Length: 356
Image (cartoon, rainbow, N blue to C red):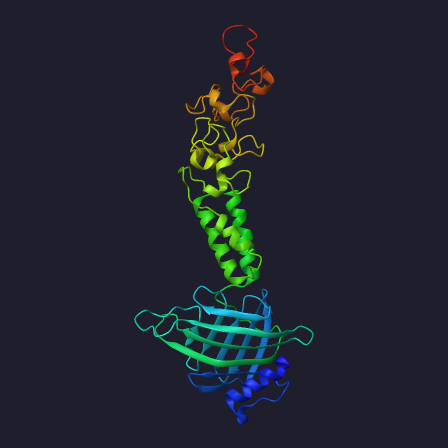
């Protein structure tokens, strides 16, 4: 049977002959607390990738929001981001995004919006709905059952916005928070990204399981207490935390509070960023100032500062402040990162890179 005809038949059965709508007539009808509720005006819109239905009867307003425009069922209540909202004649607002107060709970905030048709060619939307919604304090509820929206015109003239989110906005939030997590890694930014993924999972179609996989593989714990979430210490991004060991000391980064083994704890080096701007953050860089000498040999843990400037030697590209970069004063002829063989032109026991 044609879906349009089926919807008309359903309406006829639910509301009786006197309330039956004519074929092709736009309508929104339902039972409100057991009484027939028929809108006198209705319209629809596509906003942020979701469908919005607005129906008006006098001063009463019914709004239905879905996270996408695909045909199918959109669950209401709980953590679902779809929303049914009703404002009664007294201005009292009920929403499926509101939870019932435990002291008066008889039934949960729940329901379904079922999009049957979104006719892009003619800009019409058809479907069914039912819901239980609560006031913001959770003390009062309202029930709509056997609801139908039939060939509601999509006119893009709806100003109201959902209190939940849509797939488009959820995806944008995930992208934004992932960027923050990657640029400023912390337990807080990891948890914010994780929460955004959870909302995206509810708002978007995850038929390929990609969103759920990201959630499952995201570890916001901090096993070594260095301020970095475990997942951020998966440097090669292969999902295996045990094969990332920056200083090759046998302790994987997520269990090592000094990832590069330079004597400075990771949480302090993470705050400093990338001193030599070589693309390797200091907490993973064994030569923080890129002068050819490993940081651990420049007194990284003892704050050695040969020239008395504002930079300690391990982040100072010119340790003696003579205007010649340390790397150009032959500090490590054999290239092993240890300056024991550094050039000492005047043979006075002080290598050139530390003598101005």
